[in-house]
Image 1: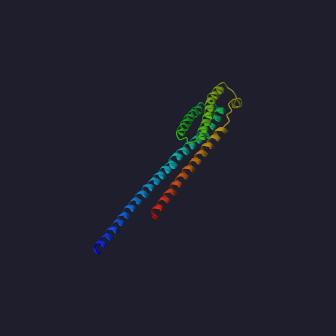
Image 2: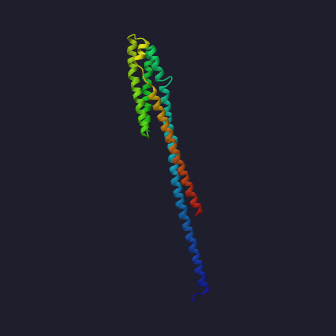
Length: 200
């Protein structure tokens, strides 16, 4: 036979166990939700770092290569070399080739796709052709060959270089979009986890 006092003690004890159980459950839930959110925020940080540094570097390298190739770069200087045969232009071209090759080499460290590799290979072929012809132009000019004759003998199709640069820019844009999608997915997952934690 239980007394009223014993019955009250049992109720207090059961209530105490229920409260302790709820506290343990709440602490476990908080720890799990905190861990999952930390994991999502870590993934967001990683994706954002990729988005901001890797793609920025690629865009800078493409911009530098485009500037070194285009007007005021090797195409422009090469045409002036054909016209004038100036040793200083030759030296500028050699310096530009070195700079472009260094930028192409640097970009290769960040290649993510086959299209980027192929575009860099195409660029390297055009650069090699220009570099070979640079010495040839100087030789022809020293022989007294006319501008028209030299020009006819050393034509280079620039179109593949422009296509390659556009392909690189497209690859960077696609990579940027993919990284942005990963950031958005992780933010969404983090929001879902946080909402789940609040519901519980």
